[in-house]
Length: 161
Image (tube, rainbow, N blue to C red; front, side, top):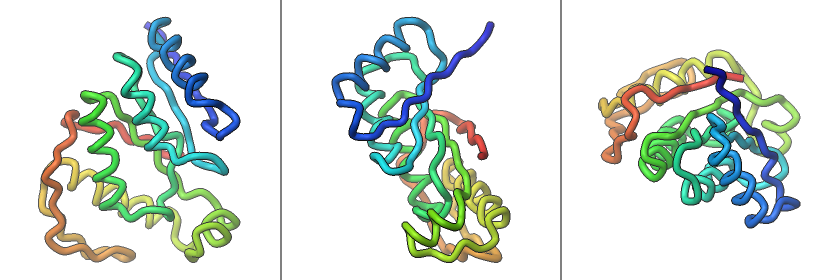
């Protein structure tokens, strides 16, 4: 069976009412997933939480969030929270973005995007599995991080951009 996803740039130009109506219609028509990213609009996790509260079946994907705007621990906590609220429907889309956005908007040096993404995934997977995260990597050093709120999904889908 084909799986069709729906992407919406969730800028403020789209009202909450219209966004919810589109998501509900996609859910009713049997779409597989609803995706939104982050650019000049709202953050993806808040929009997906709103969609989760008004739909039953749509998978909810971040398409994409950058690995430079949040720590890996915070991303793990946030996607786990969305997964709990949506009863196991979340998908994490990660990417590095680019130098203009990372350095200009977030004020963070755009260095080692592949190594950074690799470490993010390693840390996020351990955290979502409920493991204590003691990570001594090239870019991140974490000690005794453990999430008490566990995601519903045992193996969270993570897509890379």
